[in-house]
Picture (tube, rainbow, N blue to C red):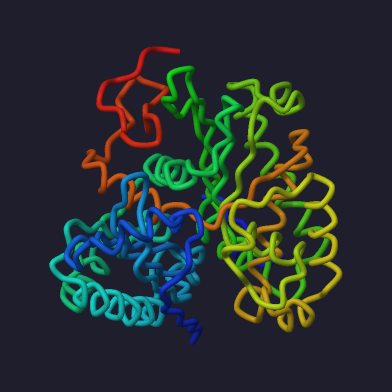
Length: 385
């Protein structure tokens, strides 16, 4: 175990710019509607995580939105943060370079109706976050907003809402990030409104885990340590919300969103290369999840590096993410996981397009209104539990 392992609890470049086919936003009616949209009808969302920087530009449609362009780059902003709670100069340089690209792309679509740029766990943790925020503004012109773990959890749920099965009244959404992992319990009421009943934020993600336990292949001891510590936190969540029996009775839909989750879907489907349209929204049984995790473990580091849907940049991170998924699946009797290639960015877009304020976590209220009938976010405070 690395000396940094105790801190996990509290020249890498991947460029991708494309105009994707988001299948659920591209039915014939929506495509026809998009033809009437003007270039200045665009909204922009940036999600700056511990591991990657991601941008999406989209236009609203009657029921959702049409994605115009996306950009993604692995920057590892949180690289080494477990050793001193500071963003390193190389990580800052990589990230600002990526944000300059984001700024240039956004300028191509000006005037943008609304945009929001959020930063998550690495910036929450970094002692030099203010200096980084100033450097970002000076070099890119972008205004960065460091959001709380509560807001991060809420946006992930909102982004995944198109995948909610309305016949199942509750959902457990987990989002494995680079520096933290958010797990949210949501409920859909009889009137179609959705609330977050509760959430827990694990103070670690794939980057901090892989740095705390370095090496090409995570040892069995390290793997089991993460699983055990995760389950201890889950037990506190279970003690408060008592969801094990509901999961056993298939009264709660499990939705996972993260790079690791989508890798599991791609490996399960034996895709020759990653295909979002094939992965987003598919459901894997609990036994399939276990089989895929074993398969990824057995690949070894070199095998994961060579795999077209994993690659060298994700070879260590995927194993770290598998520890959290295995902890979830062994702690709760999960029979199926819906895989989501969506999350915070999509949640930001839906928020902006529905002209709602960002603070849904009112003091003293445990359940929060997020969405109504797939079209509007609630503006009134919800009732008590």
